[in-house]
Image (tube, rainbow, N blue to C red):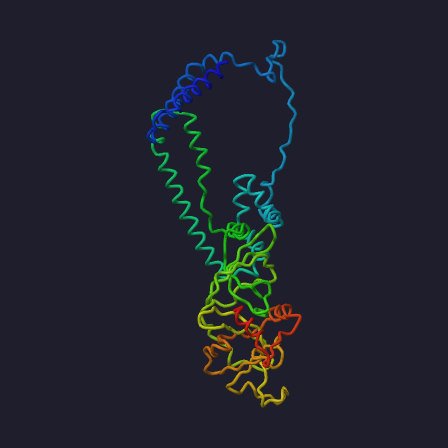
Length: 412
């Protein structure tokens, strides 16, 4: 009954004061709250002794009879169970090292000691490399740093606004020790998000959540459109954990707006192999070392307004060379032949030539512009391009209406 009176009377007062005829100033509602809490605090201070007398006796702690007093009690020695933290350092690290990312997150919620251990970079580094190593690089790392700085700045602004809103309450709490007032704002602190740290665990979780858009390159963009076969273009991607795929957004170029492709599979992504952005020319350092049969990637773009994409090709023989490796001197010539064998013989896109010694960017508005060259040294890179080889040869017929070429150009 007493608890009912204590809680019911402030409710009636609050209800009677919540229907003003005229709008009240912003501080009026806060003053109401302070007055009600003050009343509850004073009322309970008077009723506390009465409630203490009425406190029931615990059934689990009966009073011992006088006959039992003074007798020694038999206490069985129970050995304490060994906890996980009692293990040697090496054994504990070995156990934590075998946990999955989800297991480490769950273990970190057990206690503060395990929280620090489960956030160690050496535990998360292998998980980051195993899942994300093929698609993240230095550019993704820089983007993560910018994202982290932005999150920290936003969290600081949010915390400043929160502290400003409860400043007057802090002054009042020094005058009146309101238990409910303190609990109200202590619980409100949880709503203010803490900034992420720069640990590998935090980076992994940001990638996994899809909140971070990071630079990567996409093979055969736009769901393998014929105009982009055997090419790789820069994009910003984010992970979708529900489908285990990525969203990719390509920068606008020409008359085309930004394009977002969904459902990009893992095998169509890679980390950018070079640092220059998509609009900058890659300075080639392998021109003097190019021989017939070498596998290459070369920058190509439709016109000066378009970004570069990386296109797969091989180094071919000069027309004056019979292709005999024993007598081939094509590597001594200043002219380098580029072959794109995904196109049928006779296509303007099948062969191109560049100058070995003075190559910067070559081409025209009709055939496009060829930029920097990368010589592929890794068998894995070559094998990847072979896996993406189109099932049908891309056909171009010079005597027809050039429809295939126009579709190719418009797609760029």
